Length: 211
Image (cartoon, rainbow, N blue to C red; front, side, top):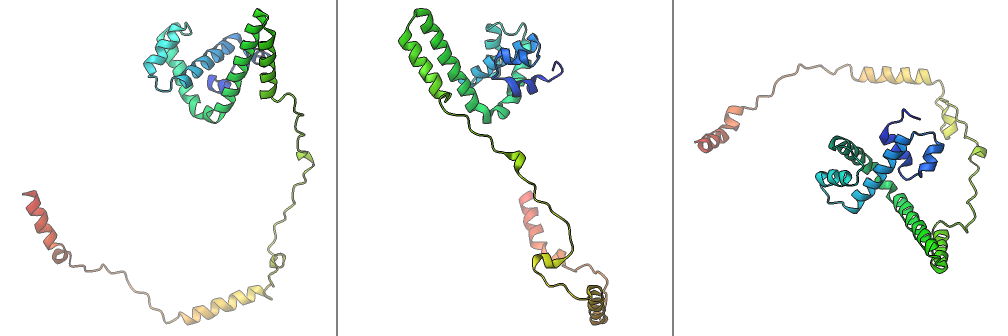
């Protein structure tokens, strides 16, 4: 797992928890960078008009990068991920929503606010459809692949075959060769377009414009 590129790792685990990545045997350095890139990716989504310089300053201000070259490397990764993650943006917002609800629940729990805890738990359960039975997987393993066999027999298409086909072809060739026997081949000749006369008036106009 240690040899995976940062972009490939982010494509698979940008919205995964640190625990999930640890179960996949990724190093703490890899996990830390994914979490850093996730946070900066959410910042980019929240600030779509931000310039590269602002991204760099923001990452440095958050203490994520020790120097600008590291921040620019993170920016390059995020720019490479943006078109790939556009289709996954809905998943990002789902993840963000769950994070907000869980954070609300934890804050309410510290205050012993059971009403807010109950509303957060209800919202979490409803949004993630925990009350709905899991959909039954389609039995793809039971689907039999249609066998196909190559053939040159036209009867499988409902076409009546030509009897003695080879002789039929030879007779047609002989017939058309006989009909084309009086055709003469001619040499290719250049067409005389008399260009000097055809384009003379345009040459005069061109000369006038150039003057």
